Image 1: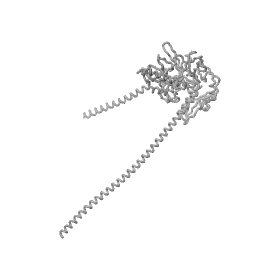
Image 2: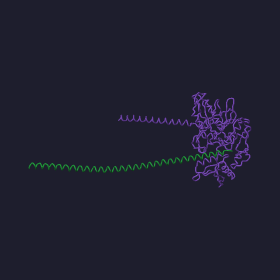
Image 3: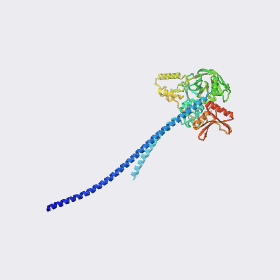
Image 4: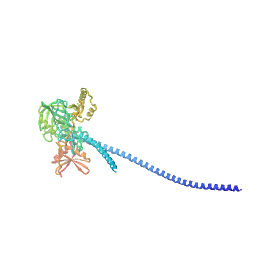
Length: 106
Length: 435
């Protein structure tokens, strides 16, 4: 009986000691979990921010591409207008020279 | 401490040396640029260049020297051409792309004052229609001299005659008896010509005429000097007033005149063969080209060297009317090529139309109201170069430019100018009364 008592007490002690260790670990795990959660939240936030930045950059790039395209189109238009003007000027010069040539006859 | 100073000094010296080397290298490239520039722009500007009288070296076919000039504001190619005794065709062909009436100030243009003599006996008068140039040869025991003048020649419809003829008579201050064909042409435009035009500014023959044995054809002066170097006559040969005066004084009656049409001229000077090509509208061009080809082939055969045919093609395509070296008869003879020279722009161009100030009390004519200044300057220049001259200038008005002709002494003169503007230049002028 006495020995049974000792065994039981030892068992209780062992279990108690075991219980104590589990609570500490739990706290540790919980705090780790909390930190991981916070980090995950931060990461998610960062990812969202990065995505937003990427989206903004894409939009900006697209806008720049459109602007560049428009600039090319406008430059082409300007070149066409300049060509047209040069043609008109050449034609005017040719016509003036032709009339002058005719006026030099007797 | 001393070691540090020594180290710094040696580094400084090295840096300084490097700096000097870099600067020197830069100097070399700068010098190279200067030398290249020198080749293009001779440092020495000639005050005068020979225009009309040349001596022909024995065995040579090329006379004169290509010359450059830098244009000034207000210059026109017809004014430059006349001052340097060149035709408008000559200056224009030698400088493709240069605006005849409104060239850029500071533009450097070539004066084609080098000529290959026509392939004809070197005596008396030879006229090359393609080059629009007259040559008068004077031989002595020691040398052969040539007087040369630019000319205006017949149109495609009424070409100048070709072949051998001679001067039958000379007349100072001739009367122009208007041919029926010309009177008819003028009548179509609403211009009634008299049967005869007496000597004076309205007479298109100018002050001197040399009548040729080919009936109805003359070598004469003009009241339209800007037409020299154009195909604008009814077959006659027109010269500048100053040229015809010299020819008239130097040409006795019965002097033979040989008129040829040679757009492709081949000649040699100092062991170098030159090719001069003129644009030709006459029907003889194809036959002349065959002759040129045969001559070039013969040259290759005789010399035993191959010709640079790509160069020949280029000269033919460009047709700039200047002698271009295409072949060295002996290797190294290219050193004998005469380098072009540059002439200083004269303070006043001979024969340039004078534009008197507009007077408020005089009649004038509004020739045009234009938006573009260049167009206005061009039109004013064309009006100024009519024969006889109609003075015209550009007046800036608000956002545009007005071309105003005048001043005229009376309303009759102003109305006459309006008529000429309409008939000759298709311009509807408006009378401006005196203020």
